[in-house]
Length: 311
Image (cartoon, rainbow, N blue to C red; front, top):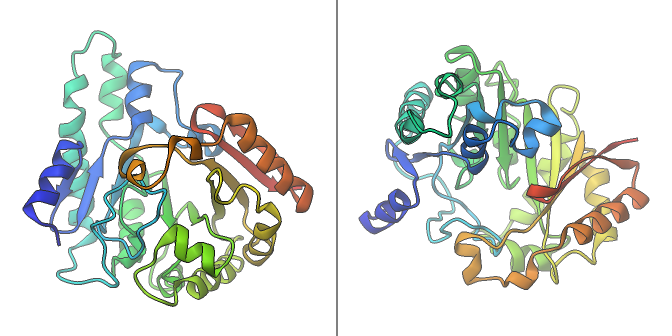
């Protein structure tokens, strides 16, 4: 799936490839939690995950969109799955092993509590969000089951762009488990903005995203569903009213407004001026609060994330 040049770039960026189509990396907040016990990610604040025990990974390096705001290398894309489909349990085993090797540099470090380090080596939370679009991986339901059944994970979060509704519909039918949280990322507010912001590889993705939203509205009694709106200054932050119809369609457990960050490859496509200030992200969230039955229930300024929940 990857050229030697692409593999080398990923390695230098501290990714570790697992098999032919999966990858793992140590999250910034996991490192911060190792160095400073009181520094944790917003997911721990909002949902009680164990930040220091987080395994951030993806079973699919490829993506079917090339979003403007994405900090990943969007040259790695495909309209569909091609090539081998590796075993879920082997992928997880490989990711855990690679994660341990990436963490080993903290062992013996003077700023790191060594007892805490030993406890962090064993992950119990999976963030299936690292790169690519994980719902392209054909055995995703079995991967979710394996995290819980074979490795005793406490929580599993899935982040998707919503373009593969047929895969989401397999949870609970082809798997015993649902992810603990299912995030659907949204930046666009109509077809034109979807084409501009998400640059999809195939033509019908906007309709499929809405199909995913509709389906997720039927399972919010089985898992937490989160509509993540990436707020990009000069692109969508004056469109709060336009997002309301999608909130009503999906009826998520929570909405998360996430301010765009000027990181990685996105710097080739956007400007630092597109990063919202904290107060601007809060104002956008307050507009959503005023327009919907959701209210602001949590905030994490270091990550520029505001959570809204049903009143």
